[in-house]
Length: 113
Image (cartoon, rainbow, N blue to C red; front, side):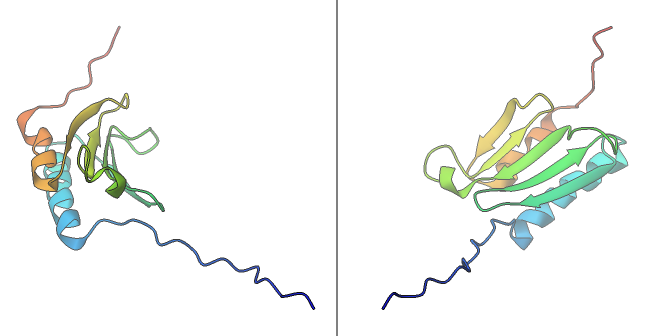
């Protein structure tokens, strides 16, 4: 007799931000909204990373992305802040240190006209 193989796969758990991490991120996002630099945000949870995207306008690509990648914990740090052109603005092991990139710089969009 042959054995029966189950077709149902157990889904992998998605990576998510913890409540304390979200509190820090939303604090920075709130300051950006008050300054008129941000209008919307999006959250993504995937099997290998979590993303908090900040949008300057609703229908555009995200201006900034904050990512949590636990696989990089021992190398460069779990947290990364990307700019609008996918450049790494800050990387680190502590979310508070990584979010300081938003306090030290004033982000302005410079048109190339």
